[in-house]
Image 1 (cartoon, rainbow, N blue to C red):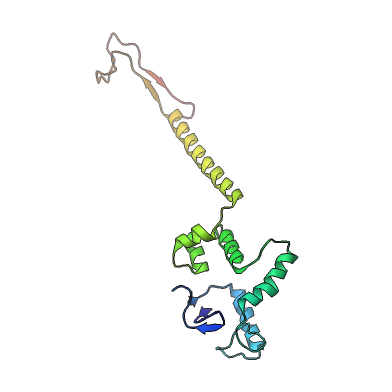
Image 2 (tube, rainbow, N blue to C red):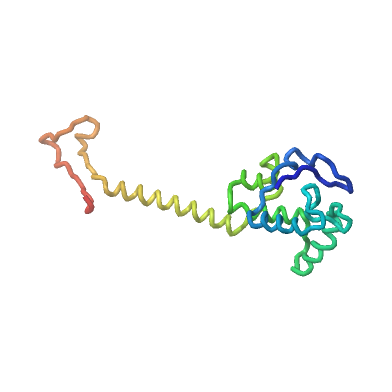
Length: 185
């Protein structure tokens, strides 16, 4: 779906709040089909007409919709507040587990990724704990495999007379070179 103009304070304008406000809006394929069917049933199915017009065929006032629909829905769901901003922040927070930060930025159509991460995305405590646990498991797995590699390597014990002399062989005064080999070798 493509947004080519916006409605603000009762007026239609060919620009948006930011440069990303106009352009492609990604929507689920199923919703796209449903919207197309709905558009065909509307009193004015022309491409220029609003998808969800008010009774007069004009654009719907967002503050009216918020008061009439979202506030009622918040009450029905026992939510303290439900606004377009709350919905966007909920989507951003849930989307953290569905794609990259750049993907979430694209969904919200922000021009700056910092807006997405610093304002819209909230931490999910169970996700933070899962991340910490996952990092811990990875570090433990790596240190365990390093310990196993070290344990499997032959250990050479040099005598005091060999240490620092660069000798490769034994002299009559040296004790025998000890080699400890693991059971897996």
